[in-house]
Length: 73
Image (cartoon, rainbow, N blue to C red):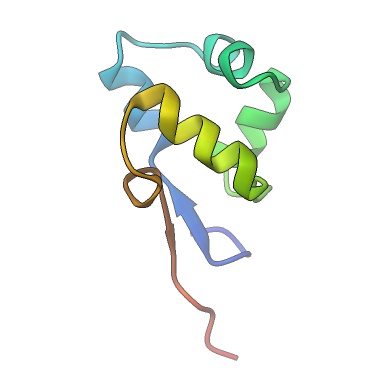
């Protein structure tokens, strides 16, 4: 879980889709590989637009890529 309360399954999904590289995913959604690395590690929360683009690459719903758990303050 990231410090933002958002977690994702991008790494698992990439491997389930022909061992897609971070660069291949980045190219498809038009961001840098470093952006994908940061999202996968939970260090960066993607914009809603980018989150939907990532889900579309894998042909699944947004909720199957990302999940949100509110942090307890």
